[in-house]
Length: 557
Image (cartoon, rainbow, N blue to C red):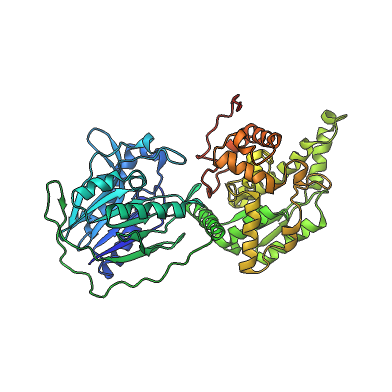
């Protein structure tokens, strides 16, 4: 038996000392469990993704110092950890260090560098050229990094040809709602192709717009999952591999020092990992992403506008779940257009969540604006200009509270609104973090209903039942300006997330409606560029996933 631990830890980009401390603590715990090999995620030492920090040579040097600082703990255990390597020619590599007996015994350089979606690895790294095989206690094994297992499996094939009996993959695979099955199916394929055990150690935690969900896996040669890590939580995943047969050392294999201790004859027992529904996973991803963004950036409290609508209600629930009720402040800012129903619902939600609730009416401020602008607007009908002024007044109040007390402003816009530009620049787009920026309106309702089902009526039913409205004029409804969200969201999914053509989308929706929606999406790019970062939960989110030019005359023919 070879006892392996997949250390599914939550690292922070740039926190070299903090990340090393997590590594050291994990090694100590693994030793107590008589682990033979402990595996950490991709770029463990510096955090993932480090982006343009990799252009700073001193950052890479400090990352190497951090690596050397914990080699001494690699005694009676093999430690495999991700770091940034640099050779004498100046080439920079996404690398894994294989340590034993207080020394780095070998290094693997990632061969397949992803350069799509949120990934820019070819901007920073050089492709690796070698497929080293390591030998532990007479058993050869291969090491690879994330994308190396997603491609055609050439790294595993070459390592298999050299005699590898099992495989270890260090990963930082971001979450999206379709990734779980895709990832598991791919790893099953790799295990069955190689007819070997496959160990996959994935990162967990939030990093700006990305959430890494953990869910580390160990599969047997038939593709059966024999151990798995929790999603959205740190965990040490222990497993005993009954690796059969030893191989004679071949040329090019890197021999690791033989162990002086042996694993316990008592095998590790694992409890089943709870499976979550898609909406449960999305909710957990939003909570984790919010918690880490707030805490890793040094904020203590957050503030948001509570309108009495569904979006701000969901954001408030997520915030409370992430950082606790004492750290969330809700502000209602009623105007002459605010109904008694929405105002009451905002207060009821705050009471249900037990958060601090502030009321700051804007009617008087808005009247002052109208008075100041009257000389210029005289003779013109009231229109979106006056509506946007109200949104910007509310934004100023929230930002003033943020500046005065150091609270992070949470933006409450959803993906549907941001996609078509149904939002106000310097108004409801203003804030530090946009929690539901990648959550379509129909999905907002689904998750809200899930919350009420699991936690009781936290979100007042009247919020769920009321037609969506911005309440910036009398009797305003979202459907005055937009198609019903049940119609709009499938079009947006096809156009934004699936890159479908207008012709293809029009097979399921009226062509003129599709053209109108696409036009709204395309002309709103300038707004999205100025929106705060938000959590990615879909295969294609607005942010690093979506990079269209603002100045753009292209129209699909």
